[in-house]
Image (tube, rainbow, N blue to C red; front, side, top):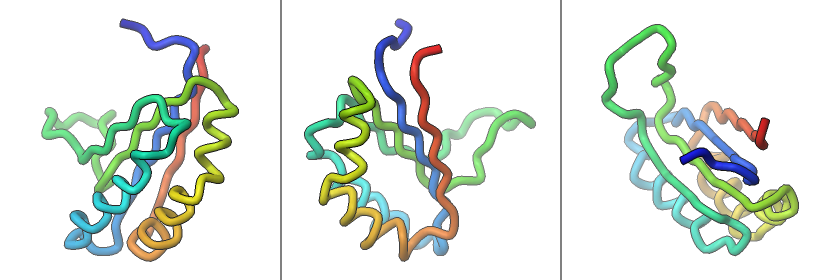
Length: 104
């Protein structure tokens, strides 16, 4: 099924210390109650066949969908998002990559 009429927010995280993975996932779960989120997925790299086109150097991924840009913008300023950024992403990550997309 093709997803239509949504905003997709993909974030990839590289941890300073791989031992912090459980704590970081705990932090991502802080985001789950944000009311503007349509769907959320917290993941780690899949054990798929290695090919040149597959990027698997990240430690954790986050996929969030929203019904519209306004919901995305609400998520960005929600106090739970601030807690995640300040208490988890900021201190535990050496790199964060964010990709936002809408229907083509």
